[in-house]
Length: 257
Ligand code: PGA
Image (cartoon, rainbow, N blue to C red; front, top):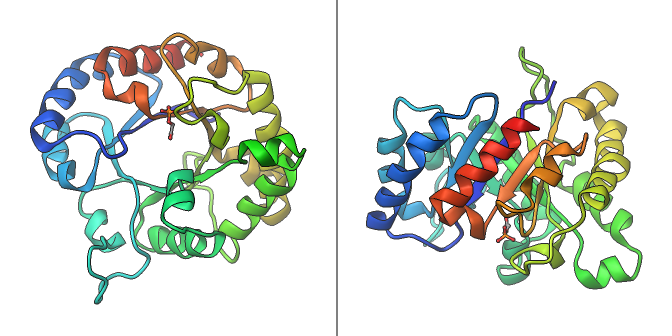
């Protein structure tokens, strides 16, 4: 059984003060929901404040990016070793990083390896652009991203049958556009493209154990549709994770399955 995970990707929103407000609003509502794993990924500057407020809760903390080296002369970068003191998760290869900051399958691969070495769980993002989708290239693009991102990466099943990796299928055309994929469409990509690509490298058992989230315009209003789909194990939520009432409703929807 894969336990659903709802992760909030706050992107470049929220100061430390705003983070304190939002986290205080989130904690009681999220703590009241059982059977769902919850995580928030604030910007780097707010991680420490968020981590203090999350102490003693079951809400996990994630970062949105990192460098792959442990330390060094890389002005402006944050290392996996630094994040390991604060975070459980780290988002890797988000399409905004690929589009605006030149991330490639190769750098994504380096980051996934580095995260695992520090016992950070990557939330590894894959997804096709609108152009690729319309050209019928979804399978080719997404399976390549999975294969190249995980090249040479050893994965293991833990005692509770979860892996130390989460994948997020985020079609680029659905991110921040208000135009979500259909749950059938997203389920199909996960079942017929992502899990088979994992099975090829790691075998069927592990491919079935990896949690694969859907991301792209998930809102309180449409969330429940995704959680009915058998191969969708939760959501990576952008815009709707910035409003406590909306994020709590999405987590509640995941608890109902
Ligand atoms: P969105 O973003 O929910 O605002 O579409 C999702 C994401 O970028 O992870």
